[in-house]
Image 1 (cartoon, rainbow, N blue to C red):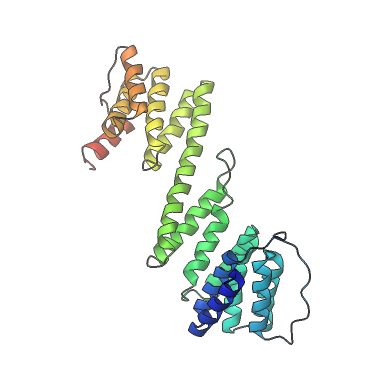
Image 2: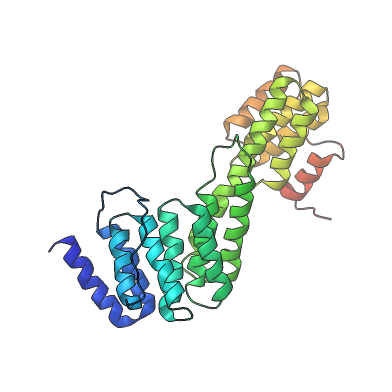
Length: 294
């Protein structure tokens, strides 16, 4: 059986189950049918006022299957315009968000998803709309050398999915992407801290690495941050702080390369890891290692 026939059979079955499954059928068709045209080959759709919403939806699906996302989005938008307040309009709106995202038109995708959440906050597909909204930020996160405003917006949008739709299918992938975006922010702090450390601006470097240890301690960046603190504090002549950083590192990441490097560095100068004083690292050690929070 050809893929197109399989898709048609699937759509007919989905249609029998209602609008929710119809959306699933539309999304299924995107991946079953392969198109070769450019993603956004825009042209004005014909006059659609004499077409039913189902007919327009089918036209949109055809464009979507050919990966002509802009044209497909226009058809879905026409459904919303010509048949407002209908189930078809609601369905067309969520499909606009999806299609624009497929075509990497993230601003348009986000706008459609936000409208869906605003108009239908209690609908079952609201979780998916919020997830698409978050993805519109997340998929634009570039290398750590650039401004991380989009990362912060992605974190906030994923947090909404996790907290407001905890039972949805999108809660778990949102948690995963939240953690990745969170680690991305920590990596940005590390990049800046390394720059300051290499440039001899040790105080500024300490401030960056401290942010990672205090605010991003669940990320994979923490072991290196503690080691860089050992380096920076030794360069500043603050031996007890360097020893405390190494002690925290050794307790939590004793088998890591970063602890071995810190231990060797301290040993070469006649010191060993130990916690002393009342500085912020001593507080971290008491709280995290000894459980003394008061």
